[in-house]
Image (cartoon, rainbow, N blue to C red; front, side, top):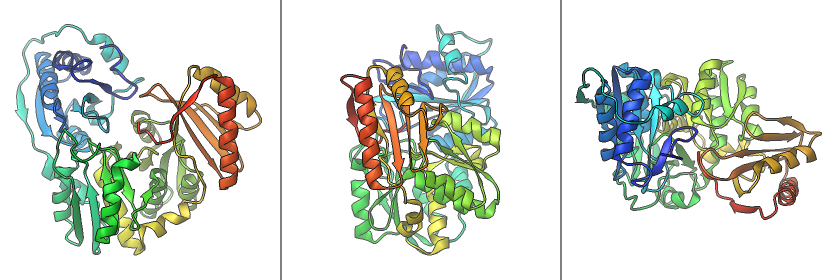
Length: 455
């Protein structure tokens, strides 16, 4: 099991790293860790997910927990089920956006509070061993939460006017939720794409951060004259957007757009944004009368911080958007509803609504393979010692006209760099300057790719 316990979840290649026996042992340890009387287990459409979910449930039941099988569901639906059903915890078998040969587990306590690298996962890892039986084995039963969940999300629909929306579910778990949602919004016309769950991913990987995966959606939005397009990852906790021109919309700017809208209903509320986000995001929050709070990257950290701050909403550069009214969890389907609400209420194209936020040139997230991250970070901090520096997550260097953050990935052997400036020329100058410092500090460092890689 070495290496499959990550910062936010459990991930591994099936069956080499994560197989049924390992899943059974983890399920057993999970039930013992929580002292659980009943838990709920869901799974995505991957070819290995049913077997892994069954093994996890078996292990948990042997520990004495009753296990509710939610079947093939999205991660947001599973999170909603944990809270609404009053379960002691839950497990989602999924590898999210990763290729089909991978799989994993997202584990949560009561109220869908996630286990993570500093909140339970290390202890769980130490507990995973031989299966320990409880006094009495738990029961297995099934639950179907799709209808009640979709009704909950549909309850957030505000301004209905005719909209044409193209939705690419990427053959993932958003697919079964889209038609019943649109049935509850008769003014919306659905242009469906790849709604059938299929763990072979016959059209493309379900990863809206990868521009290659949204090309079909971009073309379809233009061909159908749609108001916008939405693309989901495999377990539907992330959502990316395409405007009416077929252009991709930056995920951090969507945070600012939704924040402005929610602050109309909740003046003065607190909004979280991850520290990679454009300065335009916090400016939008404050301009709308809200309180913007920077957060480190990662769903477990953001969910915890939201509770601490009483935040109503949070957004990440990776396309995770979190809502207090959904139990402080991330929800791709509700994010589609929010963007539709905004487009309908404003009566303007999405590109026009985003334009005021899209005013600072940015590199996007660049992945760098380096052999000695500590040396790189130290060299950058020494070079920019006159800047506004902080270490909330990696190193953030701030100047009035430009800034950057560099941080270790929690999921890959790379560091991630985000740089923003007031002008394109300054962006180019500072990008080359920072790259030069990294090359000097780390001989042989090479750029792994400039395509954003989700967390």
